[in-house]
Image 1: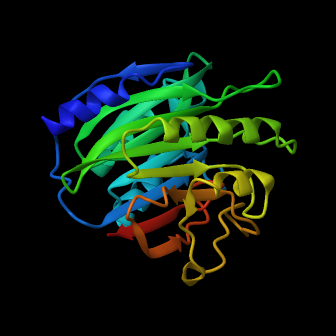
Image 2: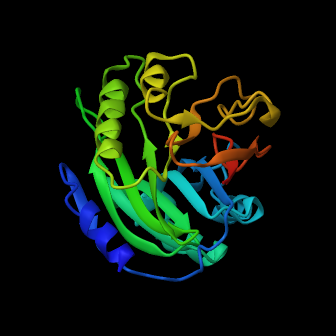
Image 3: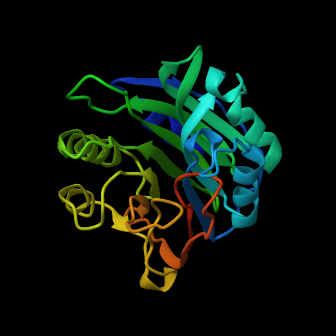
Length: 267
């Protein structure tokens, strides 16, 4: 009953979004620890020019993540042979895939995806603010059960232009979504296309906590071959009760043009 009440509370969230109410209680979600992976997979194309989803899936499996945020995902797109990448990755990892398009591209769809082994309550996709013509970006919001309680997971990919305008507007939009939720158990993961000292991160840090710890090394995630900056993040709500047990940038320099980051939370 508690879960159904919570679900009713969150369904009012709207705006420029698509929505799914899709109860699927596969997996227990009963553990206290939570492992989160964020990975911009560059539609499966590696720095060696080879398209290989198995390499991406191998990273996901090795991370032992409960929740995975994937950016630059193709579904039925010509350049990747019309493959349904979310479905293939779900099969290769044994996880549930949730995908939402942000644009139509080469006869298919392109957007963000989430892989999870936790029970899914609800999900919806929010279109991020646009101030110029170009690629529409999005934020996929997925509600799951973890440790017997609801958890809200945002997987996103912010604008890449040097001008911060759209990223700052996206941060404001995210804040509004977070403040409208009925829980503080919130994790945000994705490619934010901004560095830790930026205006964008300063704004996000007013309501979210960066999970990066120096014990995780320099934390650089891009470019994969010789990374010199961190633009990929796992953030949590300060009142969530989560504490960072470990943070690591995985030394994968070939499968994509980004390196993946995995964070383990405890309570």
